Image (cartoon, rainbow, N blue to C red; front, side, top):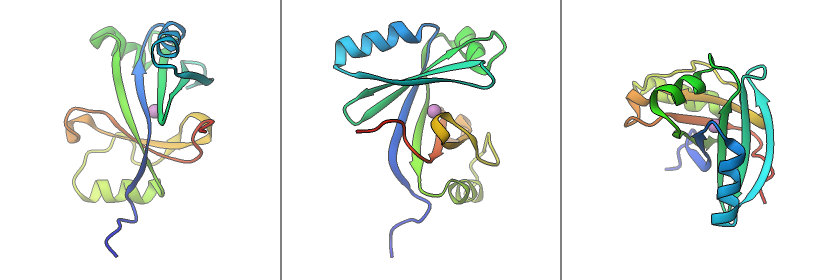
Length: 144
Ligand code: CO
């Protein structure tokens, strides 16, 4: 068969780093007819994550709550903007193994907990055209 067992099955979400998630969510709702989804705190309260759904596209708004969080450092050095693109895979451990075998530099050698019960792992942007890629496995947040 030609299908790749460790392949990407969907675009999970596009993540944007912002100091003001509520304002950005309101803009997406007002301008794109998007709907606001759930939100949660990750990294022991260091990162607030707000989901916004626009048709088949999910945005993940990342609002750091502490100055020492990696997203806070991202904002301080680059300003607000695209933080990562998340691709859904059926088997994250297998996808990571395949990526590593192909010579891609991994940020996460093993899956770690993401939002809403997902498992995630990041590939280094130096190996991916300058874009931080997240591989994600698990239940997407209130799709549909
Ligand atoms: Co993400």
